[in-house]
Amino acid sequence: MHAEERRFPPVTRTDLVRYAGASGDFHPLHHDERFCREAGFPSPFAMGMYSAGLMGAWVADLVGPEEIGRAHV
Image (cartoon, rainbow, N blue to C red; front, top):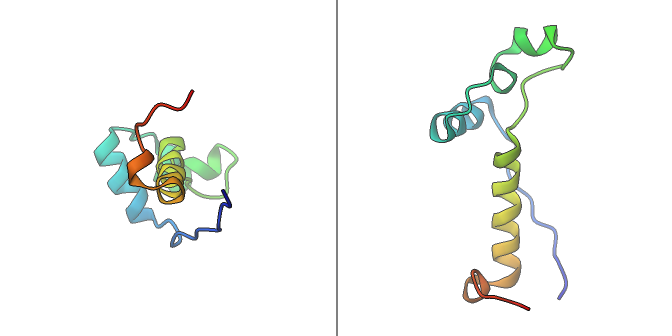
């Protein structure tokens, strides 16, 4: 199986705020510019589970919907 490159559009602040609302993760590192700078980061950044969701979409496309949830031992 060959994994092809998959590109996603740039993550916007709106994406982060919408994901925060869906997940309940309202930590200011994900939306508050000043808080991030004071914590030593240049800007807000995506939640780990947001990134994991993008990876999950890539894997689902790679293996196909018929393989998702199927046990491989």
